Image 1 (tube, one colour):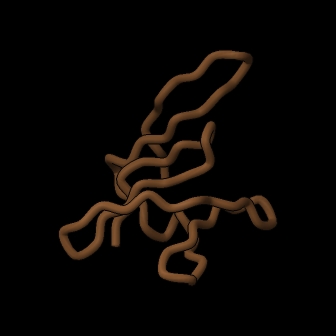
Image 2: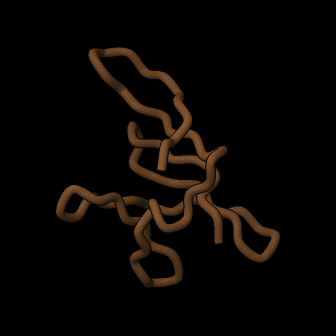
Image 3: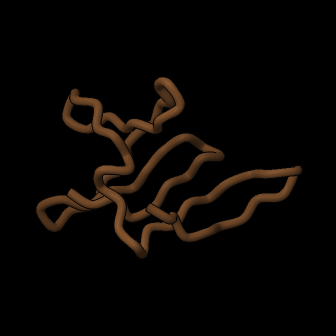
Length: 69
């Protein structure tokens, strides 16, 4: 399983596993971001790569940036 992108504005992640892509809702628990897939919660940072991007909103502006592990 690999997180392709994180959308913090709409609160979902896009993952790939087994050659398929899925969009999964996210939830912040104790300051860490989790997503639900097949009824289990997974920590987002455990499945990101150096190429994963996130969409964020800061100061009224929406922009994309690369995740730093």
